[in-house]
Image (cartoon, rainbow, N blue to C red):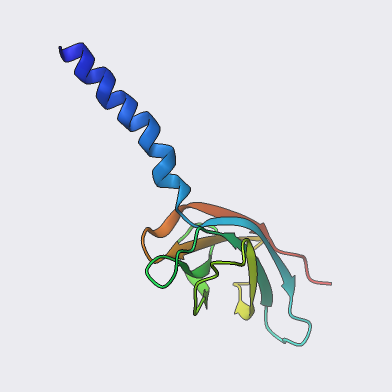
Length: 129
C-alpha cells in the first residue's frame, strides 16, 4: 500500500512539473545595442517573449534588465495588454543605463499568474567603439 501511494505521488510530481512550467513566460531571445545618441553608457534592449496569454487575467505583463549578480534592476519594460494572437512577440526598451565595465546583463520576465519566471536570459553587451 505504501509503495503504491509513493508511486502515485511520484507520478503526479513527474507529470505535473512540466505542466506548471508550461504556462510561465519564456524569454526566446534578447539583444542589446549601444545607444549612439547617448553620452552615458545607455543601451537599447529588444526582448522576445513567448507566453500562452489568455486575456487580462493571465498574460506576460513586463520584463526587466538586471545586473549580472541579480542585485540591481536597471530597467523595466511594461507590457500594457495581452498578446493572445501575437506569439512570440518582441518589444524594446531604450535608454537603459548600465554601470561602466558591465559586460553582461540578465533579463527576467513576469506574468500576471506566476510572477517572475525562474528562467533568466543572459545578454552580452557590445563593446564601445
